Image (cartoon, rainbow over all chains, first blue to last red):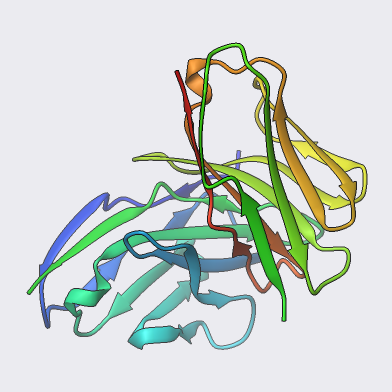
Length: 114
Length: 112
């Protein structure tokens, strides 16, 4: 069955620390990959996406993610986090070729200490 | 520009009562529409999706149903709510699966 794993459920960092959140999906084929973010009290919003081309994609607010096909991974990174990055982060995968649904990971709660 | 509306924002309903949550999208035609339930520590669970009027795909057997009576309207329903139906329900829309969804603001449902 299709599944998406986010192994870090809670992460606490100090400001200026580097961030990497893991995301792995169950099997290959054509995939469209996403990271969403939910700031406290706000809607889920798209942070970045990958569907083709350069496997290193850049999103909003200095975030980037790297698609490594051989590892079925799409890890999210940021070189230097800020207090305002405190949020919950969700990885999502759509297995293309005519499928419409996205499968989400369980999310990672990030807390950045000022 | 496209917008998505979801209501109500919060709802408290007794066990055994019916449910109707509505989601509408403006500024686009024939969107793909989705209902998710978000639970703490469990991420987002896909409940239903629809790629056209009257076309509903159910992902999880449960006490809920969905309907799409109009192109940009997606309704989540239940005939008799259970305590386990409590949760945060999110509607989302998308046009092309490569580009991601736009989510609504969600409905916090508490069944008492």
